[in-house]
Every structure is written in C-alpha cells, then in structure tokens.
Image (cartoon, rainbow, N blue to C red; front, side):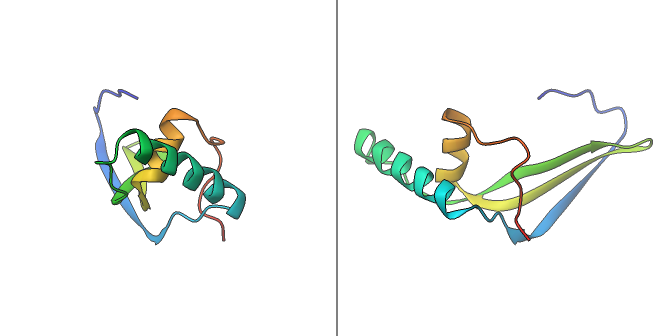
Length: 88
C-alpha cells in the first residue's frame, strides 16, 4: 500500500503478539517446513506486522504487533483472512 502522507503518522505498538488459531498455525508450520527444504538458509525471526490502519481527520494511525517471519511469509504467499487479528 502506498499512501501520500500529508498528515501526522501515529504508530501504535501492540502489547500482545499476534495470536492465531491452532489450525492456521499448523498450516503456517507446514508451509514453513517446505520453504526451509527449498532454502535451508531461511530463519524464523521476529517481525512486526501491520494489524490495523486508520485515516483519521488529522492523522493516519498504524497499529503493529509482533509475529514471526513464517507467519509473514505465509500471509504474503498464501494469504490469510483480511480480518484475522489478535484473538482476545
């Protein structure tokens, strides 16, 4: 997503890690193992993922939360439901 920033950008760091349902975690793990077989130099480190973006009257608000590279890569290559966020 490319956005012209003509307002203040507020970044909110979520306190919780992204939590996913067990069935999704299983799919991500299976996908990750296949990727490591293809490229054994991959490693599954910590990354920040955008979980919400809002355009308010006076600013843009971006919310990020910790996840891991396997989750990010799965979402980029396979896709997750767009409204899947932290479960409470």
